[in-house]
Length: 307
Image 1 (cartoon, rainbow, N blue to C red):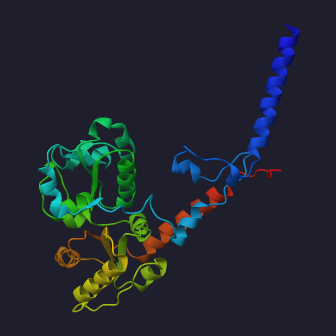
Image 2 (cartoon, rainbow, N blue to C red; image 1 turned 180 degrees about the vertical axis):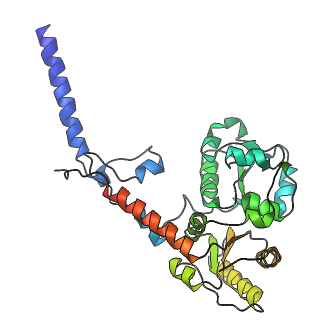
Image 3 (cartoon, one colour; image 1 turned 120 degrees about the vertical axis):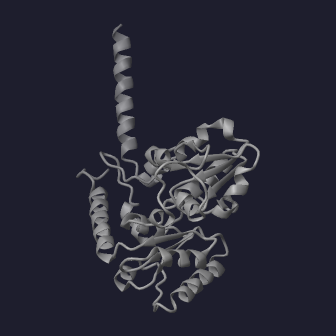
């Protein structure tokens, strides 16, 4: 009995010592296989060495969604009707359940993007992932991952429900907004679009906003050249990118009429159009709040350095 107690004590002591050693291994040396990306990228706290990849690095605009926009993942809204006629065609609506209940494509399933991989009975069906059109970057990443996991036919509806409504296609439910309303972005959504490599953000007549979005093309226009200037910016981007252009976002100061929105939509077609009219002050306020949050997260709790 006495020997068993000694053995147990030594085992516990060894485990504690081993844990302490592992906790002070630099983050770069620790294996992260099998961890979700959100955990791999999270700065470590406690007694562990900090990961130097800080959230603020997102401000640089570097990096891509997982795999970027994989060829064949994008389905234009104009092709949605033909898709729905396929044998076994299944629409996966990834929006919040409350948005789904308000309106959706007929016979669509309400499933969040992370849970689709668990629906193994859908592996052999043509799948169309649908979002709100304002966070498509995540869905294109999900499309690539699902294909890699054995789902045979997966596509993303370009422009999401915003692009679908812009084509005046039928929906089920009640209270669907019009296309112009559904295409409006808030500051956070605008920033997300500016960080999406397959998106084009065109700052048309807002110098203050252009300074806050340094990666976005800036187009100086007058009322009689607006359409031509926008068409030129989109055409140049398509030639440079040589891949699918996921969406175009137009940033303007002040209000935009629905008639102007429809004209712009026709110019960029078949690419979906999004609009930001919230002004530079709102965008600046959002960026300041985000910088403060990222800085606080980067600092983390005060801990002694490993070693």
